[in-house]
Amino acid sequence: MVDTFKVSNAEFSDDLVQWKSVSAKRQGKDIILYLGKSQSLQYLRIDKTPVSIAEIEIYSEGNIVPASDTWKISNLFPSNQQINVQGCWYNSLKLEEIAKDSYLCVAIPGNYGNEGAWASLKIDGEYVGSPDRSPSFASNHWEHVVKRVEGNYTYYFPITEKMEGKTIEAFVLGLTGQTKDIQTEVWKTSYPVPFMKKRLIIN
Image 1 (tube, helix red, strand yellow):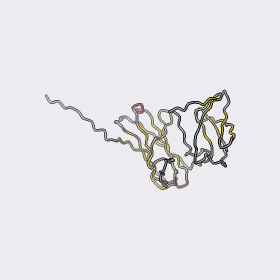
Image 2 (cartoon, rainbow, N blue to C red):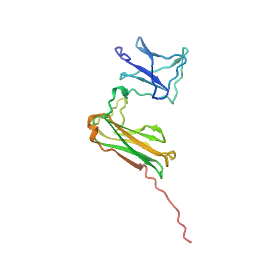
Image 3 (cartoon, rainbow, N blue to C red):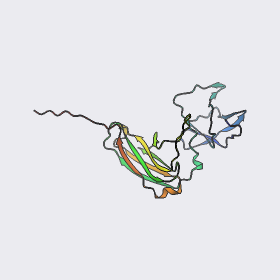
Image 4 (cartoon, rainbow, N blue to C red):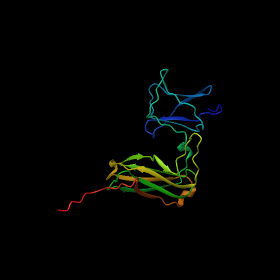
């Protein structure tokens, strides 16, 4: 971690709605975030995170907490305090039939700037994020880069059996002034193509 990096603001939350500040101090090249004994967290966010993070460790009562495969972390997304939403698009639908390996595609055509539009779903009152996108999400791959593009994003949402007959609300947030003229589209498709066979018996 760069010696000149300073944590401007660190917060934790259990529900992504209510956030509380975390005390942060630097010790040598380490930045240590302190939580009280009665505090718990599901999510942690740090403003102006460094490009390079060597390691993250969690301690409880002086002992290191073993890492879990369920932990997830990213330093690629900006704080919502740094985002100025310029517009929001909305549509709702219901899926009466679900094919194998199908998914919803939220297409956002147009040139509106790099990372200028984001899509999400709300299914039966619960928000669902997109695990995949084209072009790809930004990433810090070793010896590899993701090309910056100025628009034409498509977000992919896998369809599960639990979504059948449920009200699905699709949202698109435009983060730049160029998004005011875009027309979003929602498509349903499957890959691979779910061929089915039926047996016809003629008596």
